[in-house]
Every structure is written in C-alpha cells, then in structure tokens.
Image (spheres, rainbow, N blue to C red):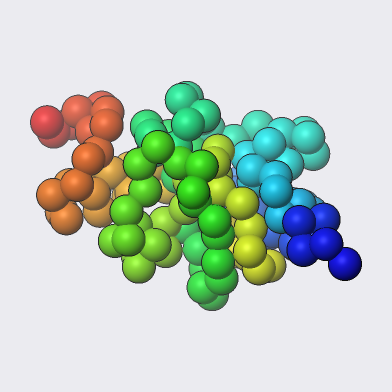
Length: 121
Ligand code: FES
C-alpha cells in the first residue's frame, strides 16, 4: 500500500467536546477537521502565527514540514500546528493551545507572534 494513502485516527479534545476524525497522511489536520464540520481556530494557515496550536496527549508523531516556523523545542514539548501538521501516527490532540504555545516559545526565546494579545510584549 502506498504510505501516502494511509489515514490515521485523530482525536480532537476541544474545550466543549471531543471528536474523532480520520486524517490522511498527506492531509493537514485542520483541513480534515473542517471537512468534518469542526471549525478550529486559525489565522495564517501557514504554520506561523500559532493560532491553531494544539498539544499531543500520549505522544505520537506529526509531520510539520509545511509549517513556516516550527522548532525542535516545539516538538519536544508536544505542540503541533494543526493548519500545517500531517499525522504520522494516530493522535490525541488537545486543541486551543495558542496561549500555552506562545508562552512556551517566549520561555525558550523563540518566535512568538501575537504574544502581546496575551497581555505582554
Ligand atoms: S493558523 Fe497560523 S500557525 Fe496555524
């Protein structure tokens, strides 16, 4: 089987509910959610602004090569950018993590766009 035609089970843990969707290996998680009528936060859709950030629960692998900015430290901390992230395993993702990912980036001295919206520059 062509590995690119593979699909993974992705559980989205949202503030008010959880949902399980299928995401193809070459599909961005945000797009798959949108196709399933789940509107997640997003702004740039380029893996830059962090608006769509999520965090992996129980580990797993996401491919973030399509993201404009994604750092090894993000991966180590379990953060994913759903707009440009493709699954490489079944995943459980806590959504709506933009403030936490911005805080993480600031603590590591990394690029953290729009951090001022959380009250500090
Ligand atoms: S929407 Fe901007 S990083 Fe995903």
